[in-house]
Image (cartoon, rainbow, N blue to C red; front, side, top):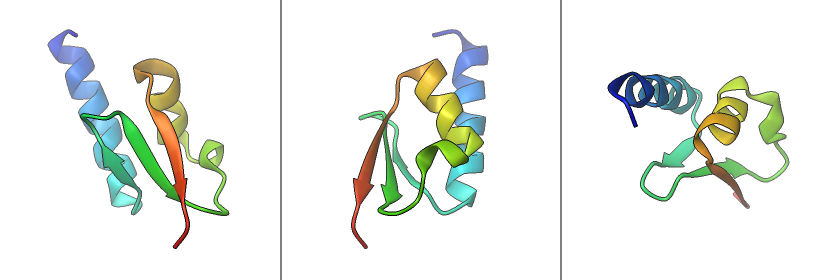
Length: 60
């Protein structure tokens, strides 16, 4: 991946983590609480489409 793509991914992850969503970058996994729609959050959609992340739902 080029340095620009790394920077873009890191910026998206930073904005997502500010919203309180947990992400594991090495596993490319986004953890979201049960009951929330992951597609409502723009940063999650970006990571899913551009960087092949997956969403894992968990019960609080």
